[in-house]
Structures are given as structure tokens and as C-alpha cells.
Length: 164
Image (cartoon, rainbow, N blue to C red; front, side):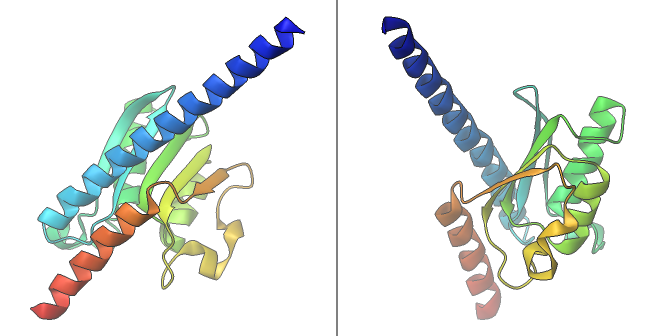
């Protein structure tokens, strides 16, 4: 009986560690989103995590690069693939502050991303509006971590844009 209690406590602690690390990594993605905000880019940030370590960081660069494909996710995919020396991210997790668009979801499918965590839904341009099956069938999706913080950043950005 004592062993079962220890196992339960260990399992609970492991779950709490995962939750803490998910919150930490999403916090890092939101830091990237703040960099985009400060650079007058749509505030979306992303980090790629492999084996518990951040291997890539990115934020939107569409204005700076004058490139409609320079989304945070696309930048992060490229940086992670370069870091790993291969194009597949099946052992990786992407933490992004906003639901990926269909273009990014398609790229994540080709990269065979292992896990996707996104903070807030994109009610106008998110991939789930087109079809949730855009991602690789084995990709695990989790949404809503730090959703309020990510949403406030986006709302503030677009409110400032409307004032100009």
C-alpha cells in the first residue's frame, strides 16, 4: 500500500514539473512576442524545445524582412532544423503565443512536429478554421497556456495600430 502512495506522489510531482516547464517555455515564447511588439511586428513569439532545452527562439519578422512568410513559427522551424542538422522535429515541442495559421501548420506537418503548445486561439486566421488535420497526425496539441497574457499583448498591439 505504501508503494502505491509513493508512486502516486511521484506521478503527481512529475505532472507538476511538466506543467511548470510548459508554463516556463510558454513564458519564453511570450518574451519573444514582446520583442516583436517592441519592433512594431505582430506580437507572436515561439520557442522550440528538444529534450528539455530551448534549441530555437523566434518572433515575427514580416515587417522587418518584408516577407509575408517570416512568421515566428517559420523562423523557429528553420532555426531548430539548423540546430539539429535535420528537417524533422518529431522529438521537439513548439511553444507559440498564437495559434498557427494554415501556412505554419502545413510547415509543422512537413517537419513532423512532435508537440504543439499554443497560448491563444486565432479566431480570424488560425489553422483550426481551415481544418485541424493540417498538422501531422502524430502531433500532440495543447492550447491555452498563458492565453490571457498572449491575448492582451495582441489586443494592445492592434489598439495602438488603430490609434495611428
